[in-house]
Amino acid sequence: MAAKDYYAVLGVNKNATEKDIKQAYRKLARKYHPDVNPGDKSAEARFKEINQAHEVLSDPEKRKKYDRFGENWQYADQFARAGGQQQATWDFGRRGTPSDFGDQAGAEGFGDVFDSILRDFGGRTARRPQRGQDLEYPVEVSLEEAYRGTMRMLEMQGEEPCPTCKGKGCRTCGGAGAVRRSRRLGVKIPQGVREGSRVRIAGKGGPGQMGGEAGDLYLLISVRPDDRFQRTEDDLHVDIPVLLTDAILGGEVEVPTLEGKKLALKIPPETQNGKVFRLAGQGMPRLGNNTKGDLYAKVKVVLPTRISAKEKELFQQLKSLLAKG
Image (cartoon, rainbow, N blue to C red; front, side, top):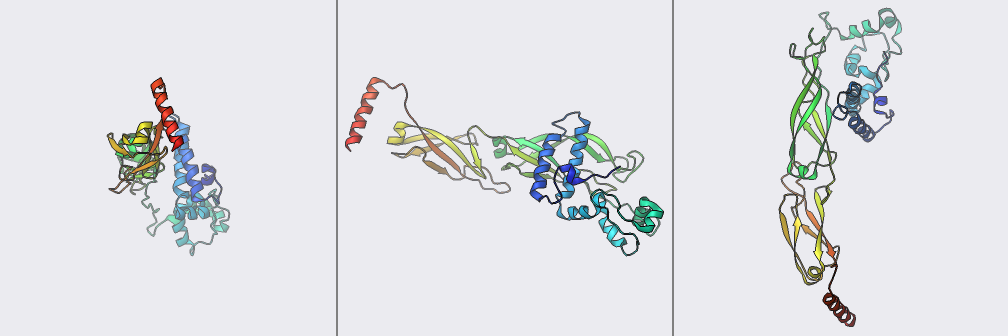
């Protein structure tokens, strides 16, 4: 069976930047996520494959090993230690196929040579604990939820450590150390998350192998647009309607907030349309910080409609006075 090309899995070339890899992963993860494709086993398998590719290519050190050893990158250190004892030349490439094993490879075969590297001095095959892979799970929240913080119950489809062997490998799990399970996981999304924020849930990712620790789960946050507020980093912007009379003579208007309450804002006389007022500390909570951004209220002067004959007469008088002044 041909080995997987992780670059091909993500649809990027070998010279792709970290940004290219991240963008490609996010696009594919949203498309093939089990929540988007319930009951679709092929999409579920594709999602797992995408996660595996991203775990390796997004880590500079793992990527370097993968570029040299292909799918066998995890054994790069063993290859290096065995280099002085083996006569064969090791070059797996990204397809994971040995291109040159010399005479020893021809006699023993790939499996025998590989096993010889992984055998310890007692003659047993070395089985090192392996940490589980990190996973990403897309979560969409409203702007208000991002402001207050919220909870989500995730439906996770994946693997868990085998309850019989605790991840070490046994007959129950076929030696894999893990079993396929569906689980519900309650997670907390903190205040201040932004579009693209990654919230780490420690130890809730892929299960470890051979007794290794579990990987981490990262919530990939997207924030829905809000009808009233626009967000710029930790600041909020809102339009406030102001009557023409208040704009000319001065007055007081209400400014909405994500807190739910409205703030009173004094409008000075002769306020121009488009004037922006800053309300300090009324913006979004800063992630991991006890401070908040600011709220910027922009004046939108509302012109009167369906005015009476008397009102028209008064406006005409005002027009004449302004023209003389």
